[in-house]
Length: 429
Ligand code: C2E
Ligand code: CA
Ligand code: CA
Image (cartoon, rainbow, N blue to C red; front, side, top):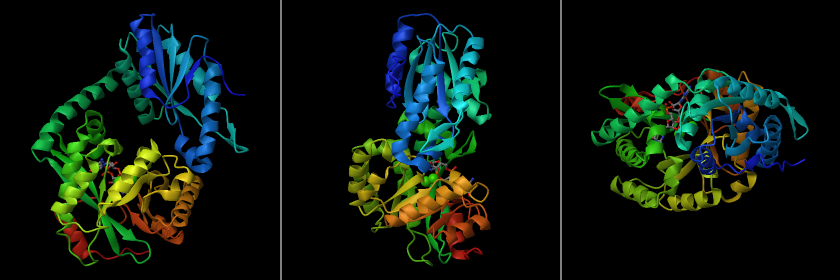
């Protein structure tokens, strides 16, 4: 039975709507409230196993359960694919919020029936209180999201916003300021990680992975500063810098295996940049890059935010001679219909499915499904996160085309990667 209750404000993922809604509460000074951000665990696996249509079903079922756990005055909004926000007015202290979080966890813990199969999904909740933790809408949401991330990191079902989460917030600001200096001062470096053929072990290319060699912080991994750059808008300058370094350096690679294509990560937000296509075309011209030698990796979730619009941009990108690869595939809910005319040549299976595929049957099935799907649509498929020989062999047995991972090579600085190409011997398969 569909939920018609006024408790449910929106089931379309809409974060700005939540902020506007929260503003009404905090501006009107309607007394204290708790904001809960509820992330459904294993959500992406359901997307992959049951497909896009069933996602709607799951969204509906979850909303109904949340609705039953909430009071009349509470409000529920969906803010991400598998993320909901709950506004709970009148909750004064942490004790009340903990009771509410536990109630929600209990209702979500019961197995659901999807496609006649019983599946269980847990949740991970972040709690922030107004006015204790923040008095305005955006900061309050940020506190709840930090708490949610903290809960996930510590493997807990819920967490309440606290000081250590706020320290992280401060470090976020510090990084943003220093990143300007890093971009201007040439502190960003490109590392390269090999991709090999699972047919004969030969090198087939490499992925560019950026690092920040900071005078104060040491070698900073991208997970620490890419998300900051995406929020601040610095991602644009960062990407052009990485793209140019990659094309220049790849031009000097030894040609033992022919001219190797280089892959560069493109943040999904750049799909909205009107200069994206001309920037890529210019960089290819400057470095004399031929067709099919540059691969642009864009995450599936980024593309699927607005498939029609994304495909139009991707099509114009392929006119430059660049190839498109869908990164982190399996986590973004492509529907089969999207595959009909997707201007893409490669799928990269998210390493989250590959790393444990020998231990986890569900992961193994997902990898197999993605390989078959790619081949049905004549796309090449790359598995990343190949950490041992067993995984390499299993992937070769599934006819997966290419592999990337620590078993073959870690990401290497530019000069070491040149040596790697010179000395490369295919691994035992
Ligand atoms: P990604 O594009 O999915 O890159 C693959 C990540 O998996 C890399 O982490 C790589 O070092 C790691 N990896 C490769 N093989 C294995 C393995 O066998 N086991 C494990 N556990 N991990 C493996 P890295 O370099 O830390 O990059 C993390 C993420 O940062 C990338 O994920 C990408 O989303 C982002 N990133 C890196 N460079 C850039 C860039 O130039 N631009 C943008 N927009 N994003 C970037
Ligand atoms: Ca990538
Ligand atoms: Ca990836």
